[in-house]
Image 1 (cartoon, rainbow, N blue to C red):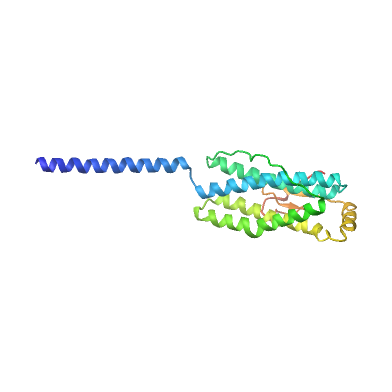
Image 2: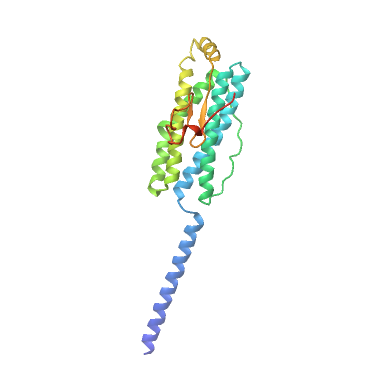
Length: 223
């Protein structure tokens, strides 16, 4: 009888220890937050979009100082789009319980507008071909649909940015001065979708080509 009682006590002790360790593990997992890979990706793209906005603002000021108001307008429009992406990522991070801190401002190295256009286009191409596809693959297994959707929106908007930049970049060689005279003599308007950051030179007739929202969600940016 005494032996059975001792064995029962040992069994109860093992069960109690197992429950305690399990609860501790669960608590540790909760403290790390849900969707760890998704949160890491969001933090990365949030920081990237904030820095892109700062960089485009600086490029816009530089273009304006060189007498290229339309190119400055393009850069400021791209900045507005990046700001929408950053706001979307900040909102989702907060909903996931993550602390969101603005990246520490860094000194922005700006060159002449001709070089800035090439640098911006190269950056957009890198994000389109490598960065966004890689980040989407990292977080898709966790299945956080809202994050996948908004990161995809940003990816598609970056393709529009590249196309707008390339229209000007095609003339940044020997005939850059001739091209800029033509650009600066042409009326321009840029519109940004307030939902996804889609950036276009003409308002869609019905819906946003990226997020499917109504055309009324586009705001025409002022110079």
